[in-house]
Length: 467
Image (cartoon, rainbow, N blue to C red; front, side, top):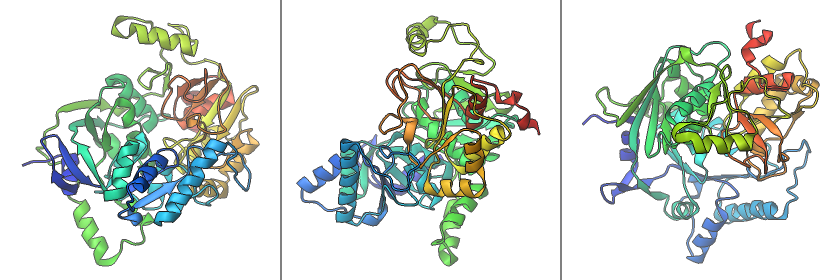
């Protein structure tokens, strides 16, 4: 029978069929962080169990780590320090590789794993973090799991997995100048809704998707979960395969030949059936900005804040109260006090290059605090070598150490109440970046434009884009 890419990945990793809706799934790689693993290890130890396959587990300290530009990073919050020390102790006990607090290559788990060749096409990758969908950019099935499931994976390297339905989102055409994969995914989420892909694994395809870089695809798949998707996939092509091989020196010779032969079959069959399909024209995409408290509360930069009406009336009213915006007002020109460029969505070198292109020759606007937090130690070193860090610092940006930082208020980087932030993150929930703080999601280029103008600005208006 014809099969989708998703079902091919599930079928190839099914250890046992449990019933019509559930299978026991083998997991090629399990990523861990400091905040979802402690209880799992405690449960494992209470049962006197060991980690079955330590080498197929990797840990990263990322969410609670401070990002101040100090040579030696010290986690001063006692609860956070305990989480980090517990993770190290558990990894040492079970011989699990760990990117610890002061590891030169430490960073955000979803940035670190692809850049070090850990993610390969055809894998099943799981993590106690919802944005594990990121890895679909390389043809791997990635998804987040809960703490009890983390314990099960540590003990068995398998997971009781409930099957999802298939959704295909086709995007053809070409993204216009000034628009990015972040704008595309915000438009998609705005169109189908925050629950529009709930219960589905989404496969992205089309000429516009093929034209994206791997880093742009990582952004796209990262935010698919904001539409409720249980996973996101892009069939691996030459672009993705070249990316992987450049970072995976262990794949060579006969092993490489076998891998390539396998990866060539990782696509949906021509007559595969999807339960739901959506189509978009990339040429229609313009820069997008969130106005509310959910990623689907988003508008084009040249649009106005919506009026409360219809089925969404109550949620719109609530969002407007929180964001202190006026219905019917243009989103462009809204004053901001803070800019945050970072997160597992947009903190890779390509993102920082886009920021530098906008900032070059300009300065951060008076009254604005702007931060750039690279996604990993490797990204930080590369950005410094390319002169990006120096350019941004000269312009008035803070250049920080890698980590999740202000994506979520679990570390030292927290916004004060009422502060409005242009952010390259993936979520704009109430209190996400600090109690009472207001988040506007946008692309790195758009965030850079906001930093140098002091207001939400259509980056296409800035001359550097057309130079």
